[in-house]
Image (cartoon, rainbow, N blue to C red; front, side, top):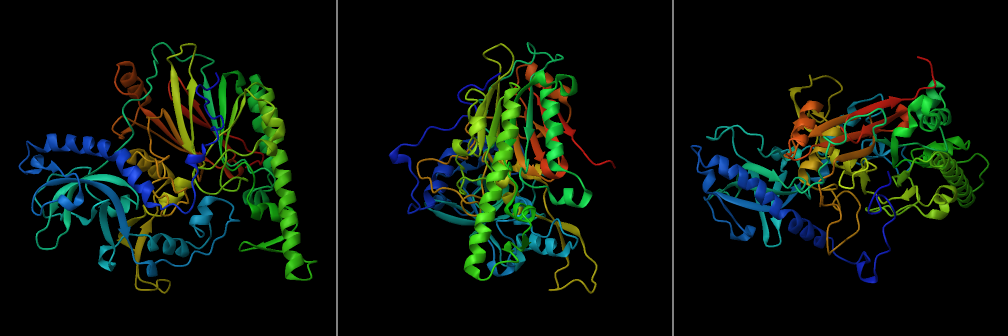
Length: 548
């Protein structure tokens, strides 16, 4: 049950010509992204043209234009480019957050988890696209850019699911748009927008020969172990994160408790060590807004040295706890893949390199079972004894999803009543998109991190974009989410409601479905996710040490 082709093993060291110096321009990665996704976008747009050829509109006559600079006014055209959202930076308030935040969610949305929801509304509202306030949407390629806007409701067109919504895209998304450029304004009014989506050439899983059994191979995905300190919810409830990890360990290693023999692999999606703020609180220090002080410090220099020394000591302790936990799981024969995350000791820019072997010496002694993975992660799991029965797994620690959520906020149709708490004359209620919807959008985009490098820090790669989905995964997950969510999608990216219907589609020889999973933080929820590889059935198991 070991992954093939490395399946989470560390990537080989890059050659000298593949290094990523920061002197390189970031424009190259956008050009590489557009080149990789262009054909898939055009293919999806062509399907709409075939359907629209019989309608009353003349959309079916639209032709693909190679470069934006060659588009003609007043003619139905298909343009492919990178979406650029130009928004007034003055409307974005200063975000009072720090790297020491407990998790990515509180870093990007610092007031979401607080008692006061109005600051959270301000944070979401600042990223809300509003054309009435001067925000402009462009489509760009190497030749130039053109302003794009949705067609007016009064236009004679059919209702469809491909209408352009500025609040469902972000800067960096590659898309094909069908529309006409206005002669008067020079704006392209978009009839429909089409994303690349994942490639069709996926690994097919023969579920007919791998029927469900009592020991069906099961993948366990966990995120946010938080070794080194208890989470804020534990402090308030009197719970113990270490005790919950022990309960999880018994569930994995004791067959009578959790049927551990069926676990073919465990993937840890980031968050293995606690955040700096939690480590400092666990060491008796005082943390305030990311600034830590100690009562016995006499000057700033001594204070800084003592804080750094205490932080390094607590980080070493948390890594030892994580190493011991992994080694106990590995000693039971269950392979483990560890994906680095937000607070792990590795590079900050994506893709993140595997954590160094010297930091987890006991775990790395299990050479054939322990995988130090990159972030994002991609691996191929063997399902059953058939060499052709495989499952491709793709996922990350969830930072890409949390970052994308900032740009997918939706304006509510209802208005907040005027009261004394409303300021700035803006009473629009803004609803942030869920982690599952954001994960589903990246699946439709065919790109794991569309906001990089504009918002998400990434390496300035020039030869290729490492976040483009080159193959269609069977399981696609994101870690460190607020709650457990799951969804099945078909080859077109549409949601599939019933598992039986999905199995029937796969057995009949059609394109396989993909299981989308949002993995909650174990330190806060005590939950892990189980995915059965034969049927893609998904369930969550909760570990609680506090009686309700």
